[in-house]
Length: 458
Image (cartoon, rainbow, N blue to C red; front, side, top):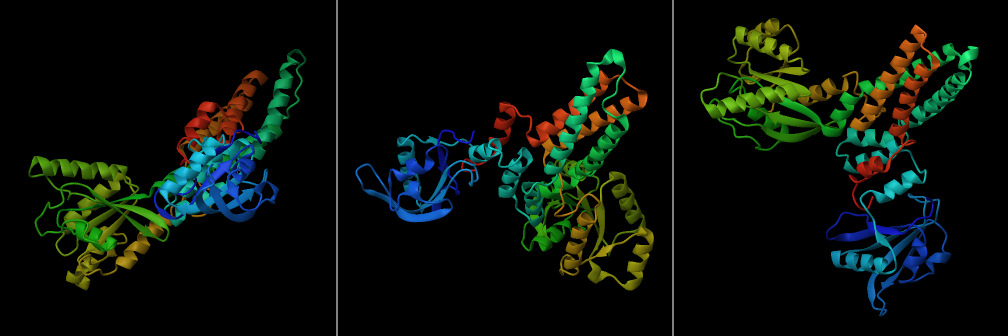
């Protein structure tokens, strides 16, 4: 696979811009580009060098002045010969250059084909290849760090090493099958047990990190709930610093779900304002309240907001019971601090018997402290370790879980003294999952499914 048909694609975002970059990779990529490049002879230039010149039509008219950067195999992203053409960011110029490349025998690249070639040529494993797409799509410090950790090897290099050790043991177990009548044991069971336990110790934190990884990748679904007129829409507007939701003294103003995003300390929070929790007075409000309850069930974090100036102690106790029953992580937030005296605060704190975050959404009082509390609530979750190896991909989670389940069955088999053929069967399942996870075992359908989600030029 080190030399294959040349492909080309626009590597920068489509549209008008200062510059555009067209990537060409594959067999004779440098020589093909050199056919209509006027400047230094690109075929004679060393790798990792950039050269100014012009690209020409067959009639020798100029398409554009460009900078051609040469990367020679295997010292390129794809491990093939690569030329990156930096031209002016005109859609017309880009089309002209791509048409000239096609006329010279280059094929337009499929989505993700450059990264797919890099994987197939051994530049990195499949987990790292998928991290390329995650890095491009990252929109927060947390998602960027998670993708970068995976791109640099993350957990996959460790799993590849452990898989190889497991392969060695499986080979010995299967060798025992050839001597079934002689009752020999080539694979020392105690050593095999220790290896499987070691692999599971690596797997368990990764599996448990998936909930946090999903939050990092997709944002923290944070639902603001409470009674009508508690100030939920005012709080949403204050946190976003814009008039996103309609604010009114009329109870039940918010009848549908309103969403927007807020970044705090590199973490993306998906803030969701909801209809007030109460008995509905009409069909439309009932639908809004049902959506509120559904959002609470789906939320990663709940902000329960109450009007501290008017809520009764019984209502506060009932609210706490409702939040506890949801089973969701939450922050209890008391609004309208400006209307409270010390005695009233102490009374409500005694009823709640837990930390209350006091704010005034209308006056923007203590909002910075609330933002910090939101960030800390996520970061102190045992699974969220920003910058450490976390699992953000469903495919990875499924294979890690499958590996762990197979190893658990194999350990149970050791305890019950199963025959080598049954033991080998579970070990092979574990090897299959690990191999598919890292890309050591692949199918065309799997690769097409993964890389088809990439952008064309990557």
